Image 1: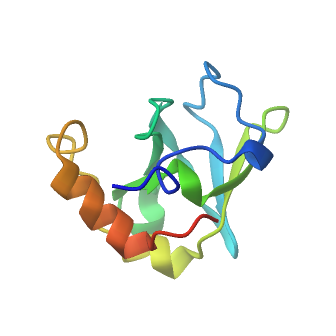
Image 2: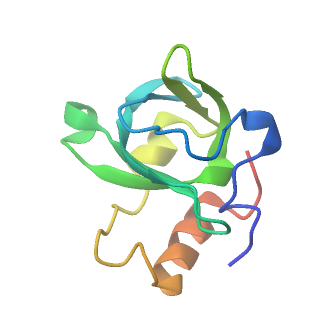
Image 3: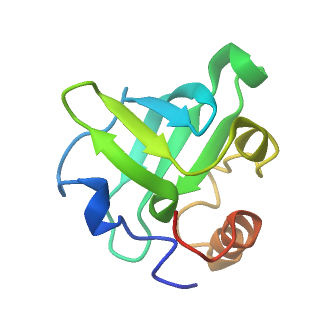
Length: 116
């Protein structure tokens, strides 16, 4: 697992300890849902997005490296992925997301190892 995909970019404006739960998530081509949960864990940071009715209530795991910026005042997170890429992402697996490096590798492979 590479650190680049699972860490917040300095340019994102993320402050460790900020509760991102409930923030709206914006893809490159529009809104995709809101943050259901998140992690600031070093080398394993992520957000889980509840896409709501947009794609029938699917939850997806987005590594922190996909985040371009965070607007705390507007409570919005901007990610460098489009709606289709997120729609077709592996579904969030609440039983595997912590401690299962294979699951993280699957998600990383899907999004690519490059940062946003």
